[in-house]
Length: 301
Image (tube, one colour):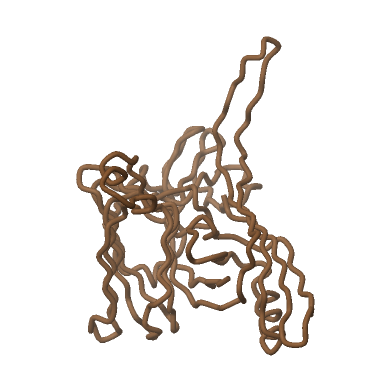
């Protein structure tokens, strides 16, 4: 099992994006807005889609709080959805999403979750502009393709979650990420860079699932009304860690108790890549040289 502690992207570290930030008209504190008017509100490190809750709404600066009587924050703007604390809210754009971000410390991993596209290109450069990393690959999965018949007749399956754990650990390195699909709408739920931590060897028996927030209700005739909503992944696993590493691992887990991170249950199963928190953990010092770590992980919706 491995854990990526992310560096959160903000105005200073997002160097470029081809996704326009024009979802709705821009908020102006001198304009009077009617109830249910939808706008975008932008200031330093704030990029929100907001909706007016009252008539005659003028001069009331949005706070983003649920208790704000004048404005409701609906989401991040389209450009910034791929950097928010959700995986089911996706940034989308025609043909491609092309962004460049810079790390402020020695990062070594990059995660892309809930993506929809046909091709992925990553170009890394050090702070002096010298190329240090390059990826150019298809986002079409080859799982289950083992002969000519399966190649031609199996359903097309696309890669939706992918993690790169081999970035050169250069401080102030920048990474241009291009997800493309010509003539289609490209989407990205989460993009982040961060530092990788090894948390032991995952045992067989790892359990992966989801919590679905959709509503399914039946009337008196047995007819169902289904309202589709977001969902979040969850995972339960056990891992073995060397006793010489237990104290540092416990300290690390304690430090991220309120920090969303990317959990990699097992590298060969992308379904075990979850962006979220641990709900609970426990360590059993079971042997003289090895201990058992039990983790229950809840993903962001």
